[in-house]
Picture: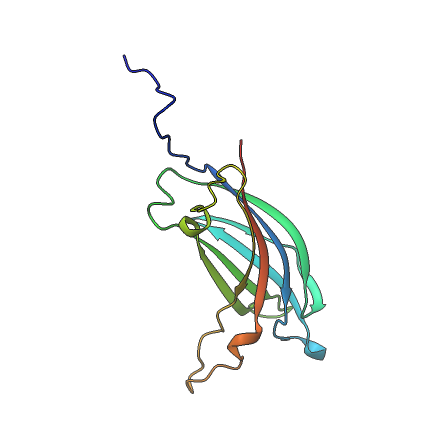
Length: 155
């Protein structure tokens, strides 16, 4: 029978991640009047969550939260949180505006030693849309961002 030794180092492992999508800044306008009807898809593994659509804007504010359960070994296997920003099209397919990929192992490794209250207000640049057949992208890289608040969800 083994006993727990309180002096031994115990490894803290997060079980959930809570994501709050705050807002987007300087997003490309794909609709009429140079604005977009914008929403964000948050994906962790096979789980997905979509924000509501912020209409006719290039500066959307969502302030929406979602919580994902982390599978055992998720951090060790390089699990990434993927945020994809889309323009809702009334006719046809929605238009890709950009994407941010956040490696969770980097979020949960903290040199501060605060393990149960990890908060990191971060701004992540969105990757531009894929290149066109001519080899050019229609969007400058440096002006597309989305901001989010990442916290673990202690249960």
